[in-house]
Amino acid sequence: MVLLGVILVLLAAAAGVVLIVGTAQLEDTVQIDVLGGTLSIPPLTLLVTGMVVITVFWLGWALLRSSLRRSKRRRIEAKEATAAAEASRAEEQKRLQDEFAAREQALTEERRRREAAEARVADTTTTDTTTTDTTTTDTAPARATTTSADTYEAGSSTAGSSTADPSADAVRERSDAGPRHGESRA
Image (cartoon, rainbow, N blue to C red; front, side, top):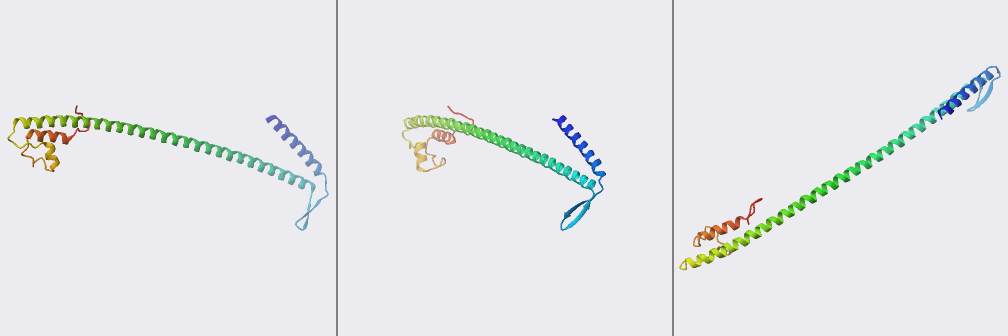
């Protein structure tokens, strides 16, 4: 392709030299009507002007084609960059969603474990309270037998239940506290 271009350039240059030499010998002027007037130009000037016009035309054509190619390449690169950014954003969003789901699952598991531990503590406390109430009733029949559950239901505070057995208050205080974070009672 390059060789063909070189051959064409050499042929055009040879033809230009032949035309210039051939028109240099002509002395008659050429009459051209331009914008309502007449212009007298020697044939050699007309030939050189034609060569300059054609050269400028082809130079403009080459610049136009190269700029169109460059702008097309930039548009393609911009589309590819946009697609890559969109893919990266989508991947990041999916990663964040997966991370969020994993955290939610961990929190749900932690809640289940805590509820199970609280249920076990509540069962243990209920069993302890029942045992304490039975023991209190059996050992002190003359005293008023107020259970911690009765005191709690009546709306009295821990300080107001001084007539009840102190061991029942201690059991109730333990059950009200519940398990602490990371602490398991079994």
